[in-house]
Image (cartoon, rainbow, N blue to C red; front, side, top):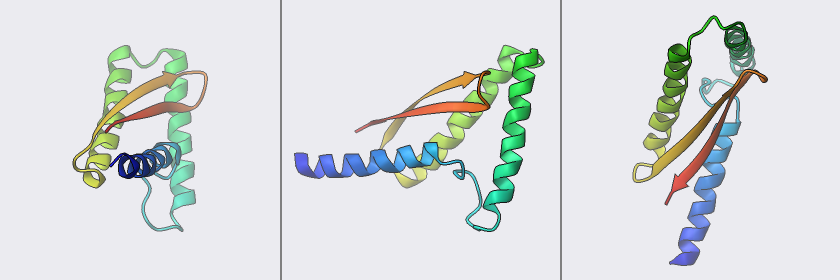
Amino acid sequence: MLDFLSKHAQKAYKEIQQITEQPDLLFSNDPTLIPLEARTNYRYIHGFTRLLRKGTLNIEDVTISLFFVKSKLDEYLKKIYKNKDFEFIIYGDIGIPGFYINDHVKL
């Protein structure tokens, strides 16, 4: 039983890690569109980061945005792993263009 859990827990962890670290998570399945969508998202993330640096966004807007990203990742993972619970720790950093999402699977 422990071997089974160890094998499948590692597989699930690697899949979740890949999902959260790959920039094409929310991209279409069409490989020809991925570069275009990556450029669009890159510009959006940089724009969002500039708004944070300038103080144009208030803390409520930032919090709403972070929880939206978290909810969409959670929704996506629940479609694949129906009987699993996930915890996400989301860090927003104005020093880098993006957000770091650390995933922890409760098995």
